[in-house]
Structure formats: structure tokens, C-alpha cells
Length: 374
Image 1 (cartoon, rainbow, N blue to C red):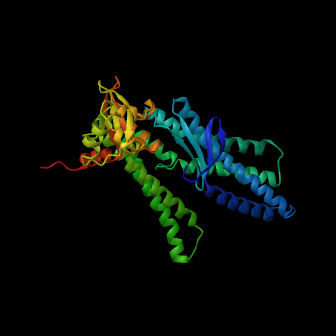
Image 2 (tube, helix red, strand yellow):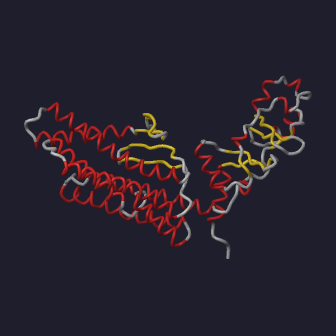
């Protein structure tokens, strides 16, 4: 998934690492090992690097704990956690779907910062309550401060940060519309993104100072992800209330299982239609399989008049179909998750309605966004 490396599972949740994480791991290790060597000249260079690496890994463990906080609350709400990924800007828990209520969305969002605050308090208490000193005390101080910073930074009220999801839940509660919450929190996220970009660009342009270069990267990250969230929310709102049947292609590629291959070729393949795959139905209109034009090559043309479509068709798994009354938004998400371009749409009794294509969904969205004529 996007070049990430799967390294195992965390409490049953797939755990991935993006290649950019290794760059950050090296930079953090070098930074903290240099700091420790300067602060404690008596420790050797090798030990400083080892302690720097340990500090870096503990910091990323704190990020993982933060994402597990989100994940465990989501799981308690019946939401599947598809993965946790570490990347250049921290971590990301990918959830199967959104919470059902604003309150549930709030608790999923706040869980991560609460875990970070809990770690800050616990590590600080350990530092005061135990006789730890020297490099270990310095490492504890770093861990405590980073967890506090992680909590406070994520509480910035703009998407895609946790504070943005908290703001989204609040607007959702006030307006009763989850998509208005996403759009509003995305706009706030873009504002913070521009602030971060400007704070990184100005010192660079005026003084040639790269000290705020990280702000520039974070700003672009916020701008891109906040914009994507707002765009997706608008799409979701347009799809609300629509079902799979609303997007079925008119004159879908459907043939009867009783047709001979010769009839199939004359009526459908040679009629100028560009379809390369057709859905097959029985006498009752129920979906029984699919036939591709290439499947006909396995049968000699001299036998086409004696061979029926049912003898050549391939079965279709029930898992690759959708119900006609299924929300269109769920169908779009299914197309994206399984990387499909089309899905057969059937009724509860198995009768085929037609085929749903990505292109048809796009056309439907365009028709709903065009202004009505006066």
C-alpha cells in the first residue's frame, strides 16, 4: 500500500512503515546522540549513538501508542482498523468507516491526545519519583516533552489533525450534518497550513535561515490533506441519499444464458457495442455469470450455433455484487478498496438490475453539481 512495508501486527491491526520513516529515524537518532554527547562528554561516541537510537525508537513508540488510542476506541464502536502506518510526519490509523454519531467521533479523535498526555504525566512522575540521573534522566525529559508536544500539536483545531476531527464532531453536533463539519474543519486546517508555510518561507527568503524548514513541510502536509478531506466531504454529501440502483448504466451489457454464441456475436458483439464483458442472466432475470468476448475464442466458430452462452460463461462470486438498495457511498468506497471499475447490481431476490461503473458515478456527481437552469 503506497510503497509501505508491512512489519507485522499490533493487537491484530496490520502495522506498516513508510520508507520516509527511516530517514526521520536516522535524523532523530543523529540529533539526540549529538545532544547527549555534548551534554555528557564522558560517554563514548558509540554509546551516544546507541542512546540516541533508543530515544528515537521510544519516541516513535509514543506515536504508535497515540494511534492505538484512536484505534481501540474505534474498535469499541465496531469500526475496523485497517492499518497503522508510521511515516515522515508521525503516524496514521486508517479506519474502515466514520463514527455513527458526533459523540463517538469526538471520543475517537480525543483518544490519541489523551494517551499522549497520559504518557507525559507518567514519564514525568517516573522522573521525579525515581533516582534516575545522567543520560537516562535526559532521555526521560525528552520523552515527556515530546509526548506533551504531540498532544498539543494534534489538538490544533484543523483537519487532518485530531483537533480538526474534534472540531468536525462539534460542527456535526450543531448542524446535524457531518459533511459540514468536515468542510469547516478542513478550512481551518488550511488556514493553519498557510500559517505554517509562511512561517517557514519568510525566514528563508529574508534571512536565508532554514531553521523553520520543517514548518514549511508541515504546512504543505496540512494544506494537501485538509483540501482532500474537504473535497471528499463534498462528494460524500452529493452521494447521500443515493443508492446503487441510481447509478446503474442504462443499457447495461446483459445477455441471456440461453443465447447461442452465434446469436450473442450477432446481437451484441457485432452490433457496434464496445463492451468486452457481459453479465449473464437466466430466464428469471437472475445473475448467473459473466462472459467475456475473449471467452468465445476457446470455441471453434463452426460450433457457435450449437453452443450456448451458459456453457462458456464464468461464475460470479456473490462478494463481487452489490444490492440495489445499498448506499451509493458504500459502493464507491468498495470500488476504491478493491480497485474495481465496475460492479453488478442485484436485487434481494438475485434479479440483475445492471452494472455500476465508476464513470457513471462521476457523471451522476457532475449532474448533481451543475446549477439548475433558470
